[in-house]
Length: 239
Image 1: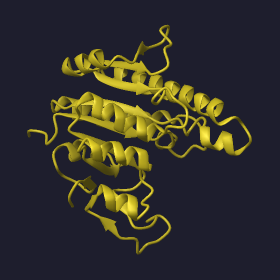
Image 2 (image 1 turned 120 degrees about the vertical axis):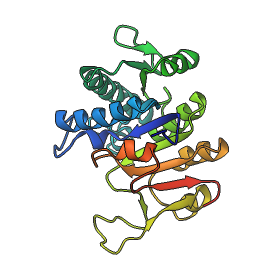
Image 3 (image 1 turned 60 degrees about the horizontal axis):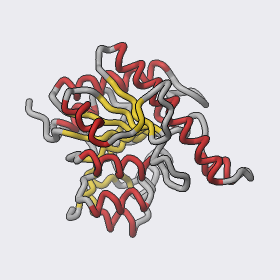
Image 4 (image 1 turned 180 degrees about the vertical axis):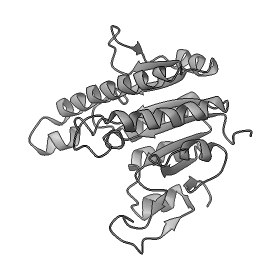
């Protein structure tokens, strides 16, 4: 079946890689996500990833505990590099050619972020993982994902979460929570639906980049979304 999108960026939170653990990487969870990415790539979809670092260190939490915010954010960026290398290893064990590009240069372990090189990797069928956020403190990895998706000319930005879309309240706490099928960027902002931060939504809105929110832990969900199936919420200019 022909995929709905040709080139996408998948944003995965660091917490999504923990599985049932309280900290770090759960090998089985990382492998399952990597398998889903492989299946999508085999459909002919060009895939890029941005992975958060919250399973290891969250800059905003460090700042709340009294650390300098910029310093704490840099530590969070290094956590995203660790996650990116872990995901690269899982993908390559499945036979998926993968490149990690970091916004903070560390040439011994990965490539520096170079936009045209990243696009070329994707054109050749390689999965590209963007690490270290934007390379700047005070910006989240959600914002980095929206920025990189715009730079790569992606057809959509996918946000893999713990639930199957955007709800008006937390469905894990409220059994009567309502799931939205479609939303506009302005509705996301005005209703304060905490799926992505305002800066990320603004970047997506300015670049007419659809945001698709789905459950990253449901086996085959990423591939299903690529084919227009399954349960997800689409955020665009007009719902």
